[in-house]
Image (cartoon, rainbow, N blue to C red; front, side):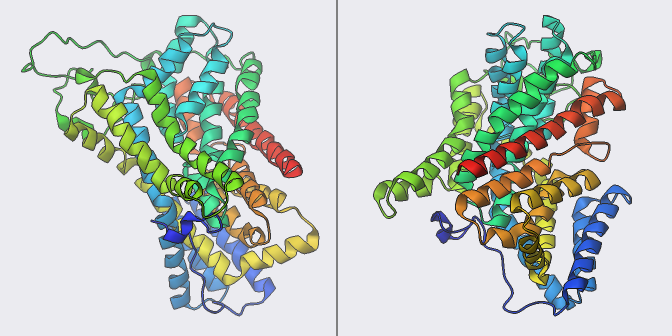
Length: 511
């Protein structure tokens, strides 16, 4: 948990451990070579050797340290300090966000939001509605979970309305991807905010301003164009096939899931483990479920966002030290806001949906194992970044950027783009870019630092291709060829990156 001082607007989300003295006396040329070889090691290990990003980042940090002549004990201290500070600040928020997402998915609350909105719009407005739905439920959900949750609905809507699948699917994917890359509490934005010591509430507000036009252009607008060139047919095997449950049976009747298997409470421990294409709650929890009402589900999703935005507004409008300002500072602290969201979700999406206490606990517990890999990658990335910083690479880059008069926003975006294209990992791209430009953030004002975090987030979404797991997820769910996936999904991701960055530059001119 962040230290108490993090409640004030002048303190960062996390405090990186800085060494009392430089960890190396290497010259500038040696540091540049060390940084390049360290980053190259990460890229090659992930993209060529197929080593897990967690191990790749650890080995990359070791290469960087050895080439930079960092003593082994100092290298280990620097790396572990980065891991600890990153997990302490970002890990808790990722876990709480996953809990809200798990309850939203398992209770059927997400299905209710989708059905309510989609059911009230005409065929022509469906792409816009799907983009809005994806953006809304994408606030607490990780991208992969959002895809698994939304795609069956997208396929079914396309089949029933005769609207081209790509025309509906691209807006839904755009809404999920933009929120995943630009808006906390998703891991990428949180890592950038933590690394740059940016203000989370301000970054959230500016991120939403950038996200709206970006979703519109990359979603409904691009989707309507690309649908003419990339025809897609909903794979029959992936269409939702859940049948209604007979609720007339006595309470002692056996409960069975959609595949006819005997259902027990233990099935809730690993939610979302059903066959591909089935809703994530294929474990059978619907046997005792009432779909949560629309507005309670929406309020639950938006509560953490509203609390963090209220804190940001209070910082701009209320005097420091007043009761109102202190109250907003506390309730708008990310961990408090997300914890409030989890507690509310337990009632609005858990108990009100018919789950008992053990089932709610199981759903919450089941939402944590899937994020273990993400947490480890983020933690190792924090360690890699800390070695970069402690070795003096960041300061070297900052000095070079000043001499070259290169905009920090452009530098952050370009570095993130390069790492993203090379590794396929938005998280690795965000961590590396943030670590390199972090020294530049120390000389920037609060709005500029928030925009720098968003610029890095935009770069981390650039041109997803065959080295990105999301590329194959989209390909298989929409039944596309590799070429069709590049024309639709990869181009959409590039549009998001470029349009989002242009939005960041525009805000930089206005603020």
